[in-house]
Image (cartoon, rainbow, N blue to C red; front, side, top):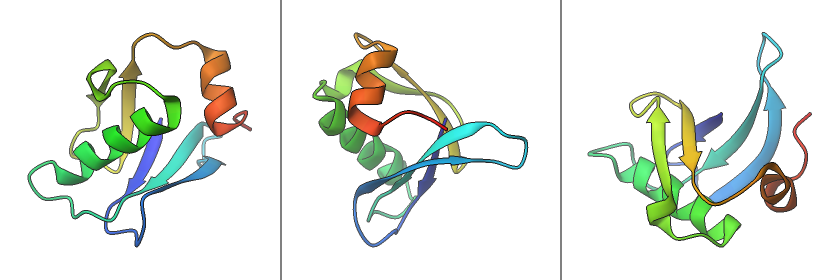
Length: 89
């Protein structure tokens, strides 16, 4: 899961957090506004760059209009996520 902050001042991955129920999520921020899917597109580009994958390998599978999103990323394993973003708490 990823929690996206649109208009966050910069494009960045801010690390892992836990929600109130104990689920881990990755915090991300982008400079674009959440209009017409621009923030979602910026998020996909940010994640693709961090993982060294093409943007076509990433899609939002849940939460397209929500701040908390689920992504499907083809061609990577858990070790790739840990290498790019660190281990989830």
